[in-house]
Image 1 (cartoon, rainbow, N blue to C red):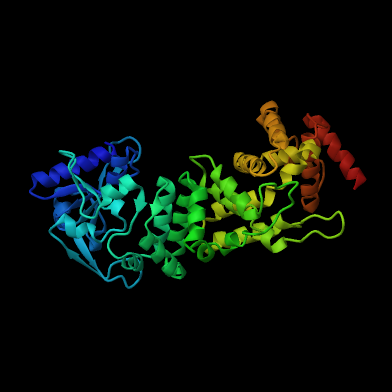
Image 2 (cartoon, rainbow, N blue to C red; image 1 turned 180 degrees about the vertical axis):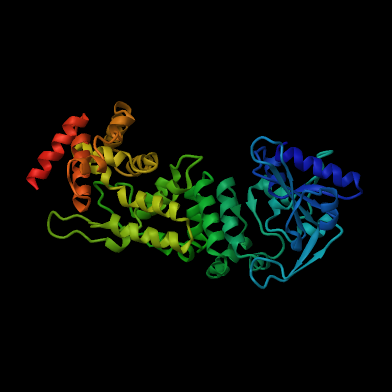
Length: 446
């Protein structure tokens, strides 16, 4: 059973038991827009205890806030999940995220007034298709407007993350943010730091991967959130680049152009790698010097890598994702040397973890600047012509082989094995016998 079918069944079961029940929130918005909904939520006047009675295998992870998770395991794939929330009013938000107190309500109208934006506060009766709209959400959908419910300052004070969510929805749907809502974000932008690093990371990642990353970051800038969340990116504005390599303009413009060209769907690590690949340019900027001088960014990849790692730590990325994002930043300049690389160097380069992301970042980098894709095409052709066995060939000799030759384990082992691999990747060794002879000759030279 998929999530929509489960949500419809939950509504039907609740109504047959004498309760009100509606689909609510983003799923209704997406249904009205003709888009596929990511998940489904149900709103009801049934209390959490009553929901659990009707659905004995439900999860009580949010019961203190009137929320129950109903799951349906079909036996194939991931189980379907639907969040069922009791009509309620939220009283106070001392921590800027969770209500201090929940008061259950009897009407859906009272419930929707606690939600964030009008387009997310629509209710749908799945039995007859009736839509309940108490806040003008359908009008805002038609007009393409993101509008906070009630007083925008109050809605954002309840949960500061809603400011970033407003940006994400406006970017994703190509909507405008209503003036009072926009002004409230600008006013409260310095308070965004009250949100946990993990929630901010996830929201920024969604902005980057929802298919409208450029507009999302333009809006982050316009709402003053960018300088709070990622001051390193805001500092790209006005940083000039050599026009012979970057006719498009400054580092900020170049980065926006790359964000605009991100594929959709897109790996989260690639999106962050694109965003951060030139983060080291502002601190390494050097103006032209001398009659033939040009703008320089010496060691910007190395410095940018350290900055990217710090940003990833700040937003509590996993070690695995941090390593990939840092690698994308660290290696993005290496593509300029691929035509001159020795076979061994090129093979080691292309066998980096998730190399397809490195190659895509390079394509975006070139197409958003000078437009020369020769090196990109060279690497693609190399990968097409070269088998995986040639790129990552099986070892011709091992440590045990070296011991059998009478060598004592130690630091020399590593140098010998690396030398053998280097010769193998360069096409100078292709058999075990030739490799063993290479080792003997290497030891004599040592």
